[in-house]
Length: 432
Ligand code: SF4
Image 1 (cartoon, rainbow, N blue to C red):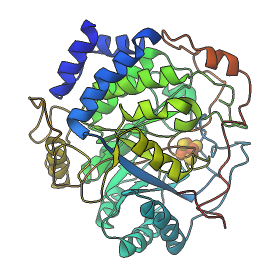
Image 2 (spheres, rainbow, N blue to C red; image 1 turned 45 degrees about the vertical axis):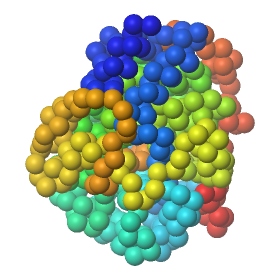
Image 3 (cartoon, protein in one colour; image 1 turned 90 degrees about the horizontal axis):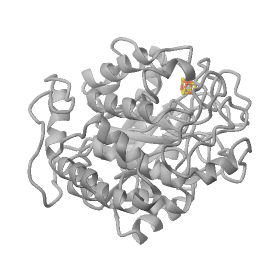
């Protein structure tokens, strides 16, 4: 297939495809799907080998958000029966983080619901970071606290935070359909603030909200332009009690096409399967590992994931290995960009910033030294989750024969979506 040969060759060189080529990936048929996975899998192995980075979510503050993100179970007016609690104390958060790290996670993602942090909230996170790094100085920490004000990113950096997550979620053209209380431009501004302060930028998307193929391609190219070091790909978890509860637009095949497209557009960037992995990929999760090099371990912010041990078994059974604390996630040339950004030398956008661009040659995965990488965002907070029936364009499901989606439409799937009742903010042990 000419398309796949072209995309593979570009990906192995670290080059991005054209917009038309990215759209063509989403339009492939089920008969072509394994070829698509194999082609994108070669690109994944070129830059990330068979390593899988594990990330662990700690929801520092759950629910009660004044924003109206339609996909989110923590939004204003959400009827989802999620856990609601205010800030965990630093020792409680550190205890929760320990469970993920002992399960193999090298990154802990500290997430708080809300429009954005106050300066007092930054103090709380500073204390929490200290508590986590006291126990294990090597652990990477990503903060996900919403829209940042001036100087807050710098304060987080000084506190020892390694990365900041803030997802663009969907295309600029449809952003106003899913959220009215802040704008796409606000989100871009926060990612740039984080990057400008030397934090590794983690920013991704949510698929399945009724967007078109063009919207998906738009947001994925925007993330590449923004220089995101990590791209979490969330698949909408349609929580009952949220406006998008009936948006069941995804099949496992569609999810794999989306992941392959994201990989081709971001060949040397951490691509993470985030919220909705179990719900939408289901038994096809192992094929997703051939495309993404990063996943969350255990539960999400407000929904349950599969057991952490099941994640580990899946990785081993599929022939992959968990990435160690001492290993760099990003290939060397991308790690160098991030290091340059940390020293105030440019933004690190693809092909630009401080010295990089296309990398030639095929063969062994690059090692690297500097430890940088992804972020977080998933499962229901300032990442992904529920949705909204209002004003969202009709679902476009590409070329796939999405029988699952048709069957499931208009039905609540409580068999697939379970509200988190354990881990952070509860008395019960986490599943990692
Ligand atoms: S995504 Fe974040 S800002 Fe939006 S409603 Fe959810 S918690 Fe609030």
